[in-house]
Image 1 (cartoon, rainbow, N blue to C red):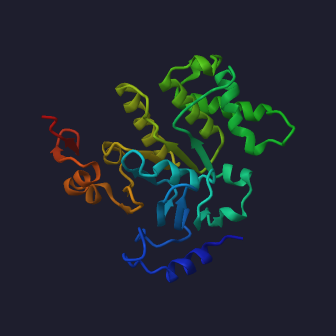
Image 2 (image 1 turned 60 degrees about the horizontal axis):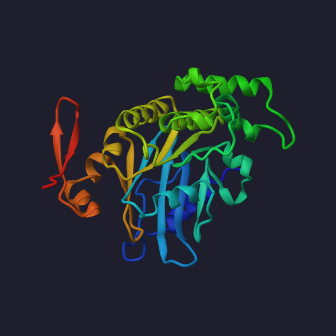
Image 3 (image 1 turned 60 degrees about the vertical axis):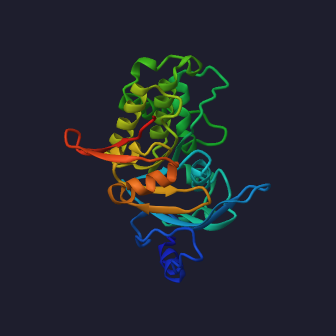
Length: 290
């Protein structure tokens, strides 16, 4: 049974008083939400709160970029949504159902997670690694079926890395590892693909190719949530941006209105200018190093 009604009831009771809450997404929580986070708070045992009372929603096919400086808590928030960490308080809804009432397999059928760091313990071939994305649909003691390999190979083709099919994952470059992990998330047939700092450790060319791939996935109907500390990314990707500041304040909005020179300068602790460049139809960030 869907819990959308419960989301609406919670939202009506949730008064966005800035003296009491760190954030609230002004867009109404409704049945269009693939993800809805209500008043989330998280703290590690030996530290203070990472974020408090964070609320926002993400619709089907939308891109949401979590932007913040290093150590702001972006990855922690992403891991809470993916149920890899348990919030101190609050609730997360996936397709209208509370994650508190969902099994690991049910969550995996909604969320495909691409981690920031790829440490491969075994020399699986790319084909073997990508078919692991089919785990939510395979029994505990069963092996992948022909249709699972077919879907894995289709995901590999979609990314355009057929040439890596038989290569060991331990022999891949950083950019190739990122592509293979995204292919596995596609093979998982999840509604949402989450990427934690997807351009970290990549050279400039692979960064551009990864951002282009993320944009294409959104155009193909996937819901995308990614973390980044680079403000160019939400500007290039469009969709919506959620700015997470140290201290746990989260502000959600459109990149063109939220990412002002004043906000970015405050966020990064240095003067930043936004210069409109008509030839690429978007603003370009500029800062002086002298």
